[in-house]
Amino acid sequence: MATVAGDGTPRIRIIDTMLTKNEKLYFLTARGKDFYQELMRTGQVAVTGLNERWETVRLQGRVRNIGHECLDEIFEKNPSMNSVYPGDSREILEVFCLYEGQGEYFCLAGHPIVRKTFCFGNVLQQQKGYRIGPDCIGCGTCVSVCPQGAVEEGTPFRILQENCLHCGRCFENCPVQAIIPADGGYGDSEET
Ligand code: SF4
Ligand code: SF4
Image (tube, rainbow, N blue to C red):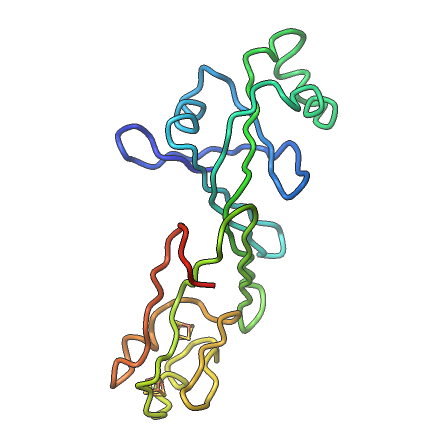
């Protein structure tokens, strides 16, 4: 999980997701840790994970501190926590709920690559990557330069978003600047 420190520089830690329910993620940390202070100050976190099949999930969103709510349930479902914080020492821990955000599934194992975006909570999906606009003259350059075969012929040509690397090669090579970068980032865009 990644946060931003008070001086604006990035921080990252290995943090277990202790619970998932009702499309929310729950994790905890101790009040004395910098991680705790950063979560409290920004109310945001970014998360990524990778499995042995080269499938990744990443998401970013908003968190709220829910104190000791769910703490006993977390210890029941994650019994190894009892050796890290035995007895009453769990009192120093506080639970955070990641309640809204957006993310992406990304798989590099095959050709073409596969990406799927998702959002949860009160967040609208924001378009990322590139799209082809009406100025396209159908020259086919983007098809020939794309490393993933992610451009489909048509009027105009179309980028297959689920197979696109977001590498920008088509954007750099289009002779008429018909390829438009999306805004990117995380926010409250109207774009779906
Ligand atoms: S390179 Fe540009 S003009 Fe040519 S087909 Fe692709 S989007 Fe259209
Ligand atoms: S951004 Fe890269 S992967 Fe996506 S369509 Fe353009 S050239 Fe292909």
